[in-house]
Image (cartoon, rainbow, N blue to C red):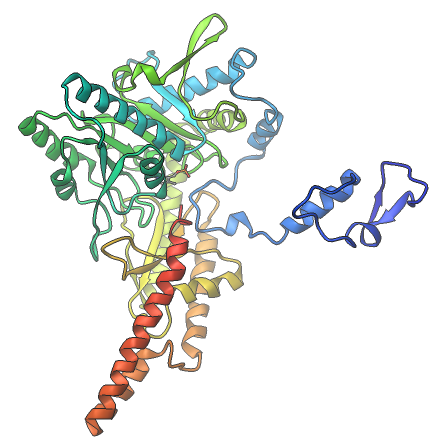
Amino acid sequence: MVITTTITDSKEHLHSTFASRYVRAPLPRFKMPESSMPKEAAYQIVNDELMLDGNPRLNLASFVTTWMEPECDKLIMSSVNKNYVDMDEYPVTTELQNRCVNMIAHLFNAPVGDDETAVGVSTVGSSEAIMLAGLAFKRKWQAKRKAEGKPYDKPNIVTGANVQVCWEKFARYFEVELKEVKLKEGYYVMNPKEAVEMVDENTICVAAILGSTLTGEFEDVKLLNKLLTEKNEETGWDTPIHVDAASGGFIAPFLYPDLEWDFRLPLVKSINVSGHKYGLVYAGVGWVIWRSKDDLPEELVFHINYLGSDQPTFTLNFSKGSSQIIAQYYQFIRLGFEGYKSIMENCMESAKVLKEGIEKTGLFDIVSKDVGVPLVAFSLKDSSGYTVFQVAESLRRFGWIVPAYTMPPNAEHIAVLRVVIREDFSHGLAERLVSDIEKVLKELDALPPRLLTKTAHVSAVANETARVNPEEGQHLKENITETQREIARYWRRISNKKTSGVC
Ligand SMILES: *Cc1c(COP(=O)(O)O)cnc(C)c1O
């Protein structure tokens, strides 16, 4: 490769080859290099190092969009230098965000008229949206407690133990206690009855999830609304509901229009959704919508004078890009209700192909549900020979990135693999993945029985030994139990590090 230097330096040849000059020195890692380098060389170095990243399209761990139409890529590139916060300079971009807010509010059945402006804002993602919604609940609760002359220093939120890590962030950053309803084997979402039992006078909201990160399952918001209404009537509190619809917010309206989870339920005061998940935009956009103006305390809103009129803003960051908002508007008008519906139906269809293929191996239990976000979560029926972590590790060789993780309390002993189906994951790829899973299982089965992993095999030996010589058999059995515990501890350590990576 020949790279033309841009500076004429008598000591340098005008044409240095890439290998002869730029890759000789180690890559700068700690200190900014002393001197400049030609743009072509910088490009090549960065580009080459990035070749070692995984392929985003094969990243089955993520809900986040990895493919958009070239026309939209063009719009994104042409607005990449626009700072969203300069609303006076870019009034059309602001208008596009307002239109998106209106469209999403209608999709979620907010009580707004056909040509009324809805209350909401674009964010960097659902995490920022959840920080804002949580703050609004905290302020409203505090104001009410103050007015009643009651203490307001111990706010809490009730959620399921399956919440996404951003709720734990919110709780820690904004000093709100997170009261988690524990899960149990076979039931991996928040139980509405137990949640309502945990609600007390300090509860600022109950957060329900539409599309649990772990299994894609929708929580029963309608039942939660009913039980919480009863409790509110009994106690005189008015504990509200927030719905974290990060992944399900762009699934349910298209696939399950009759499912009541949104503003049709009176206690639902705010909803967040990730534009960059099933909103079908690249990473960097989320939305939070409030039921009405009354649900967003005025003191949290900043007012920007925008072309002589008032533009309220309520975000954590000041500057941010405009591209994602523009791309979201593109998707809304390009696809329309019809387009979103058929994409989501297609994703469900691919999920079904994959699920059936995995079931056919006979070795897995499916823990995801048919109604929910298009994903397949599955656990090994028998982990004595090898674990889901080994299956995930082996699939990497074929290029597939499939996460494996243990469930939150009290279902930590269940470890699952999860494949998220996105728009760009076709039936063909689903079939291919099934065949690669089958290959991996065959390989793992053929591994020589090692004491560490083949505990099932060793158990049989121990039983036989115990029959012949009880004392020795007992000793062997204790060893095996200890070995099994050791394995469980090992994988838990690894997966504890990994659980926060599931998003
Ligand atoms: C992805 C996700 C989040 C976080 O959303 P980001 O847009 O990545 O910030 C929160 N809650 C749930 C249920 C999610 O699936």
